[in-house]
Length: 268
Image (cartoon, rainbow, N blue to C red):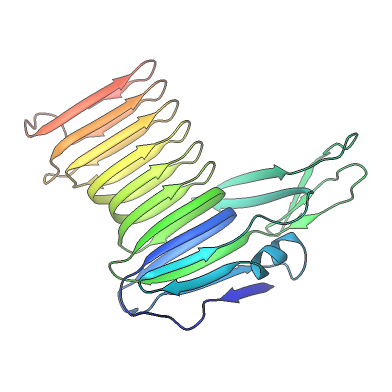
């Protein structure tokens, strides 16, 4: 295993954690008993591209900003990473350079490790996922940038700004939520202030919405939201082919509900 731990913290109290992880998994825990932020970057591999990326990662804190930066896996081979979110297994493939005449011939998954069945002329490789584990005090927020990185948040988070391509989001309670994605699914139990989600193919599920402004923009993804009795303001959901399902909005004059879909179904 390769691991990098956060050095001595520079401040006490809530922080903004800025996390950059091109490929892997991020687990954020908001602990009401915590007074300082902690972060660990790790992989099960002792050598290889994932281990090199962990060793080259940067973890630092400047005042109330915690920064975790993991570089792309070095090397030009064919890498694959498996993630499992809510029982759903996803295989991500990344090829920076496959030489002329080489072909990829298959995939094997052994104890969570991904082994490409062979790049002809290049041999077999096995790459374990990179994990970023972050513990934050109450009142903290997260800003994350990734490509194939999944994010799981446990505990109430004040704010989340997520920009990802294929990564999935699973969170409990979030105050302010902004997501810009492409294919990943977003599942959030509750939003208390506002939400702004823009995605292409990803589905978005918001359990209990109590905020004052909600906006969803998508192409093929579905949107589901349940408004609580204290929700207010505008709820806007637009999708080209996806379906829109809004609960708790019917007959509430103080809610400004706007929905539009081209080929999908609208239920409210």
